[in-house]
Length: 316
Image (cartoon, rainbow, N blue to C red; front, side, top):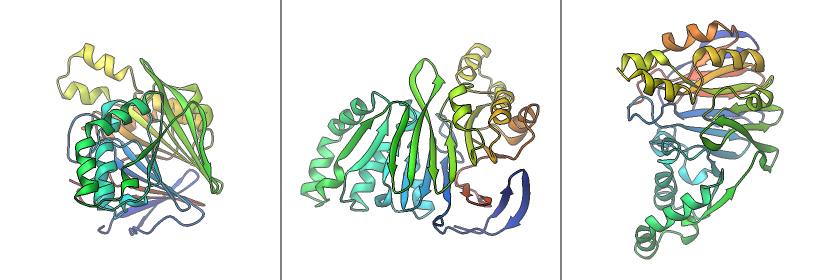
């Protein structure tokens, strides 16, 4: 990675500094990398929704949208090192990169253990049909390329709200959020070594999420910008339907003000052409605390201080 700028966040203070390190998270912090901050439109600067969370010696993907494995390659995280994938819900933009991460991660990195996957009801059905769809490829990769058979396996865990994973001081809790008519849809809270991160997933204003995120270190929340729809010429009724499944900047500001995280951050930005000028002023109507607009390959180190590292180069 090239040199970039970053910021240190300590409670409500934002101080500018400079340097970038691709080093792994320290033993007392959670490291969050935004692999993809976009949604269905295929654009080069905001890939599909996917977030890498590193806590202790664990590495998890939360959603696997378009280009997740390419972004992992850019930050030099080995595909075989991923301990598992958590799906917030099964909309295509959140899962379309999964077959690539699963199969390419197996073939190229020679992963020799099953890939663990957690998600809402329906996840096993999706994964089992993917196994069928790629049966031809899997069969010949094992016989011809001698890829380890265990690496082609997927262990699927369908979960409800509550603790989904707990091991080596890392706890992942599923939070039921409101993305109706998609039901259920989850956000996730990750706790490790006294640090905490909440990922909203796709949701309207959710009281469950607000409760789970109270005084959290980092709250990563989705957002939808009506202005970006208007610029794109999308009909008002279509815009109303889509935005109605998400939160506007003003609504997100309400969430942040109630939860009071040490840092609030936007990802899964709808539409991906939305700018900080579209998002920040509306948020500031209801929230004055620390705020960042996410971008692909942004890194947030959550420790005694919160360090935000923003890539200084184009990611396309």
